[in-house]
Image (tube, rainbow, N blue to C red):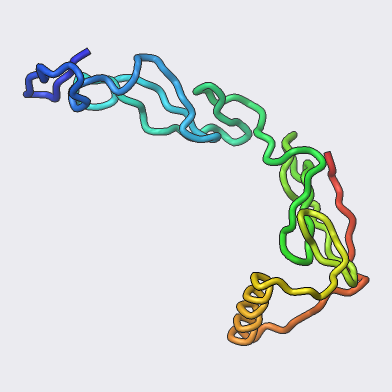
Length: 163
């Protein structure tokens, strides 16, 4: 359909995007996991356009343009990631909904560090990247008055809520 803004004539060029519908009437889509949009007439011209995104209510997510109850899993079961050098973060259900998220942090044990979501022996070997990171952290601690507290055997925890 050719459309025109109020007071203007439609363009004779049928492919002029300034004077055509942006979408098909009634179409719904999800611009993100947590919002929906509808195609309709929402402004002063005669053309169809998408509505502003409407956030889904708490506990709902957008699927096929509709906000539906339930949730979106944030990670795959049985996976883990390094939160930092000294902490593994596990995939599980750690809150009140039925979805998986990262949590259940497990702290380091003496002589280990996190690599690829698991603890490995800490050989003390430094890569150029880890040296640069260590230098940045040390300068930041010094600037902000932080004190270093190394991990100890008593800093262990066990993950809970694994799904």
